Image 1 (cartoon, rainbow, N blue to C red):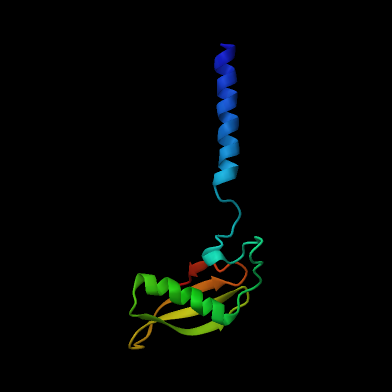
Image 2: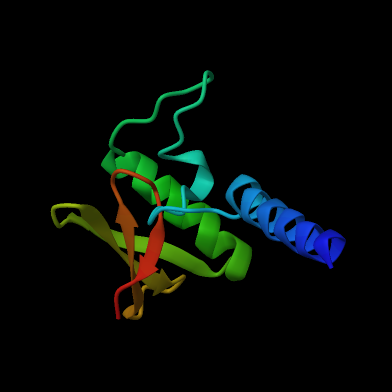
Length: 107
């Protein structure tokens, strides 16, 4: 009985340690490497050009016929309009958080 209890405690402890070591935590996704503070790069807030590049890379993976339209600064994030190649109208608006590069669908 004592061995079973010890094994259970050990299993719970191992699961707890594993979850902190492997699972992401916090509220940032750190998309495209932005927001990480490692020895190679310390990211600051994104510029408008960097936000356009992140959105361009994302939409080109989904559909190469889509383009980035106008990009507006709205405080904590940039709002980028996604348009078709023939500029027929806005298809989607994607937000890019300035501090992390995380993408979020706004409409």
